[in-house]
Image (cartoon, rainbow, N blue to C red; front, side, top):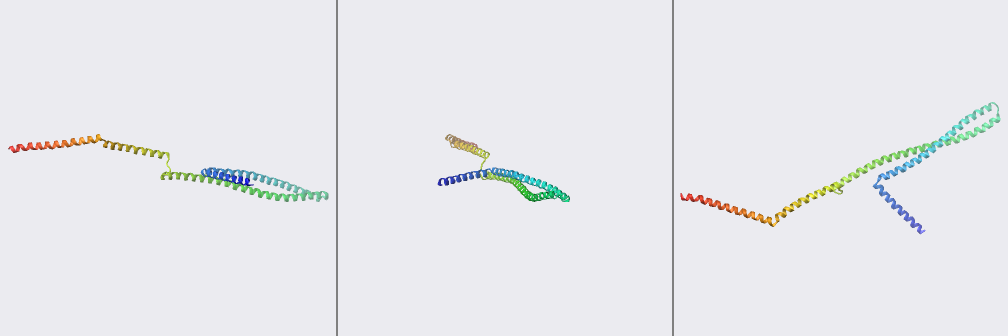
Length: 236
């Protein structure tokens, strides 16, 4: 008994896992769930259609038997009138018995026909209702899937805007931007290294010294020129 209980619990646990797994798949792919539901309803519709056909066939069979009995009753009634009119009592007795049997059969057939008609109408109503539910479910499937796809597109766009989701194109553009920044940084670094190089600094120093020397020479030349211009004036 204990083993049976354990196996039953394991079976229920496994069934629960399978149910959760199927539920997760249906959430990820709702079109599968909708299609399965539609297929199940179509199968029930086919079964109901077959049953409705059988009910209608039974109604038609009962109606045909009722028509036959009613025609036979009319014929027996006419024969009975003739037998009574011609004083054929023995034949009249047989016809009366036959008429009574037909009356009973017709009463039963009329009840059966009424019930068969009710059953057929109920079955047809159920058939129409199931067909309507299938059509509504198909329309709901299209509507809900369209809403889901629209929502997924909106979530994707919002994710991109919020930086939560980056497509390959955006990633490639980011890599290009990083490369450009790296090139700019390398160029700046080269310039900085060039300015800090000793040879460069020495050349700058020499250029500065040459400029200072040239300025000193210029000042000396200006002073000599001024002195030369001042000497004739004193002589006069």
